Each structure stands twice: as structure tokens, then as C-alpha cells.
Length: 339
Image 1 (cartoon, rainbow, N blue to C red):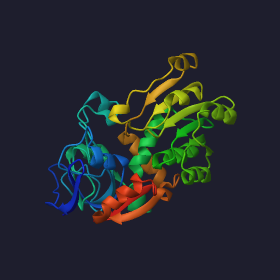
Image 2: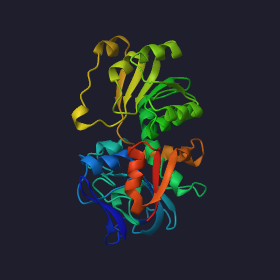
Image 3: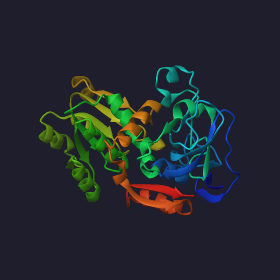
């Protein structure tokens, strides 16, 4: 089968490899769509802490179930969206529903072969929580954006976003725009900060208040809200967390959502803001299998139209073009649809 294999940082090959096989107790899918995530690009350019080589990349995957070796799998022929975690189902994290931080977690496209390939093997650890049947009315390309939306759902669950709250979203890339859509679906009020005019315009079209990045962010937010933001989603590693904390209403929640470069993980914060305004600083990593199911339901019910973020579709041979489309901010989401 044809696959995109990362051999080392900077060495990505589109080549023929042995066909993926159905594992004992697992399943096999024929990949229909796999979306490009910025972490795929990071792995190509720099590597990643969870990555092992050689590796078939891709974790935003939808495909047809063509073989199973367990009665726990959905029927053969089902269209399946994959939650990318592969978990033990036994540790305290799994047993309490926070399976995104399973102590023995594997991840498709990181330390298990992923979806930039014609076929993808699903190990037993993914069967119980990882296979989600896609409604017949939803196409594979749209369903492939379930996992990124699920990451946003997980963050909002962590912050307990509720109706009428002001949600300050720093960055209007694909994740920031998904946060915007999700915020609106909760009947909360998004405020989006983004330097690129085209992305600001799209956020405004979705129904958000929009702001240019500014050293006076806290004053701009206060003027708009009268009290500050109730929640902040840091959807870019470039967010100035100190200024964001100054922008918060009393008992606001600041979510560190975007991953941070290894050499940029230490940020100065003023604990006085945290103390006197009783703020909460929240981390959100990936998504749980439950938030993944919630995201798929939002897409299946057409509550959130994630398809409007798809700005490029291409085949596996042109995967690098798709990476550049995302990396250079020429568009938003690229989907690999032909293998």
C-alpha cells in the first residue's frame, strides 16, 4: 500500500510499504480522509516527544471498516472516525474518564502508524473507545475534523463554559475558529484576537467580536464587556498570558490550549491577578474519547459546520503541498482524500 512515512525529521517519503493487516482482537480500515494537523508539520520539521521512527503520520482519520477480529467492533462496512488515543482501559485515568492522559497511552500517527496511508490497522486498545460510527449524511472529509473539534470541546468542558459568558479566543487559525463556532453553539459570546485580516473577517462572519492584537488588550476587552472575559482560550503559542490574565473578569478561567515549543514553555505570570481576581489557570491536552463523541454529535447534528474550514483537498502524493498550505497560512484545513 502507499503511505507517507516519516523516517527522521525532514525525511518524509511517499512510498509503497507492506499492506496493513488486521491485528488480533483489532480491526482494519480503508482510509477515506485524513486531515493535516500542525503537529504533523511539526513532526516533519522538528520531530516530537511522542514520535518514534519510522512512522506513518496522520491522526485526524475517517475510513471504512473492512475487517474485524472482535465482536466489540461496529459492523463491517461502517464509516468510522478514529479517536487517536490507544489506551489501557485499566489505569485510574481511564477508569475516571480522563483517558487522554492514560499512563500507557499510544497515539496514532505518533507511536502507532496513522492515516496518511491506504489502510490503517486498529489495535485492540482502540476498539472500546476509539471507533466512532459516522452518520450516513456526513461525508468523510467533514467527519475528519471531529478530532480537532473534540480538542476544543475538551477545553470548554474543562472551563465549564456556559451561556452568555464572554470567551476571549487568542488566534483565529483553524483551532481558534473551531473555538469560535463551539462558543456560539453554547450561546456564549466569542471575542477573537487575530492579526490576519482575512481570518478576522471570517471570525466576524461567524458571529464573533474581533480585535486586532494590541498592547492594550485588557482595556479593549474591558471596554467591550464591561467587566473582562469570563474564559480565555490560548489558541496560539504566541499568546501573551500576562496580558490575557489582566483581561479577565473576576473568577475567570484561562485555558492553556495550544502546545508550546520546548524552549518556550516558561511564561511569566503575575500571581497577584490570579490571587485577587480568583482566576483559574487550566491546562487542556488533546481530547478524551468522550469529548470526541460529543464533537462528532455536534457535526452529525449540523450544529457546527466544520466543513467551511476546509480550504484544500489533495491526494497523498501532494501531501507536502498540503503541509505548506497550512504552514504558510494560505488556508485553514487541508484534507488528504485520495490514496
